[in-house]
Length: 352
Image 1 (cartoon, one colour):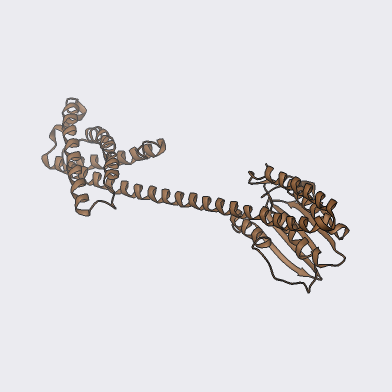
Image 2 (cartoon, helix red, strand yellow):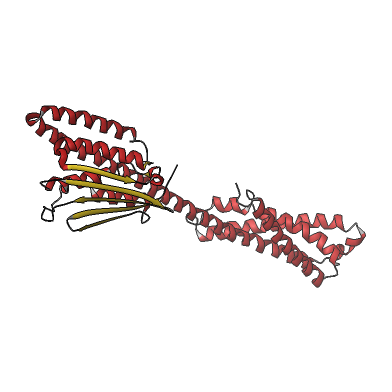
């Protein structure tokens, strides 16, 4: 549908502009002949409104002959012919209207119009039609630009969604691989512990499947996943692994991506606690202030430990997920001091 016809406000503004053009034409009739003001306005006002509606038809012609696929000579020829035809039709209607109005005493001076004034109106008609063509091509170009921008944004969103799914898909296999290795090691040394770890692993995977279709889950549910992960690892590390959680009530219902914290907790175990003879405690704190959710995770670590990494998940995975989710609106900071490894997360506060 024509963009002006589909917008009542735009249509009113468009007709007002043509009504002002009608006043200008009335002034020309008054100056160039013996037509009285009342007669001139009663003639040019309906004529200009009528021609404004006629010029709307150029929109459909413009769409039928796009600038990119139509040569300049063809464009000029098509719209020059269309402008002449429209203007001639407009003049014909004007002659009929003038003869009707001249029968009234106040508009009798319309019969005094000269052929020069008729040609003047015809030239104005051609110019107004060609102006409407130029405006319509600008509108079409703007719409095409908006459509291209929208498609680009849609493709970007689809690409981000695909990347998020790929990143999330890396987490469970990585964790599962490590857990199965641990279970395999326990089967010969401690079969009951291996069985317990298997059951805990099944419970953890069951819960991750529950959240698998969700883009966001409450923070308290994400932390419950972390607790289940710790329960699995405590089968292997025993009292060497402690987990302390301090979460403010206002932060519990804040929404976060599922399995966002689990890789961080796993990193704390595998690259922190596992390298310490006496183990240690992992501290997880969360609080929400204003429009930000802040999560703090720290664990003791061995400064002399090997820095080599295997696989591509963990901290880098979380960082990439945050970047994909909210560009620069989410932040992950990592630091190490006094044999303590610290991860700080800052995210927008989202709630159901």
